[in-house]
Image 1 (cartoon, one colour):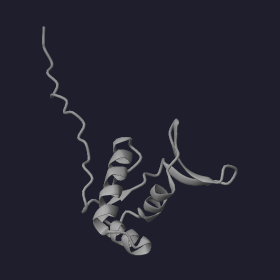
Image 2 (tube, rainbow, N blue to C red):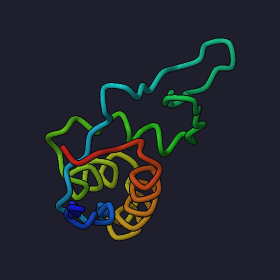
Image 3 (spheres, rainbow, N blue to C red):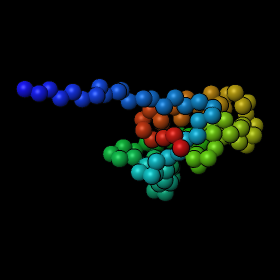
Image 4 (spheres, rainbow, N blue to C red):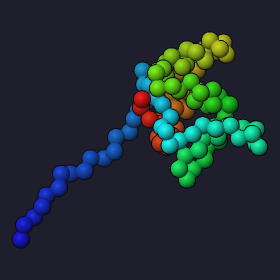
Length: 106
């Protein structure tokens, strides 16, 4: 009797979102405006997310080129808000969406 040994499976790694991280929305997930409800939604396979206005502004800036820090700087200047507050807020939001599979590393 022969035994086949398979290599051990590694646990999936969690992407930790940091200031230098560049994120993108994968092709199979769509950010769309729902005119009937007058709000933005994120369409994912078998799921729908309802981002708030702040999240929508961040998601619109995810182009696969800009880092989280660059997005935070843009929003800090646009809304004249403290950079550290904006950065901390969007890091938490982006980490949550990344953990749910809505965002990926570009």
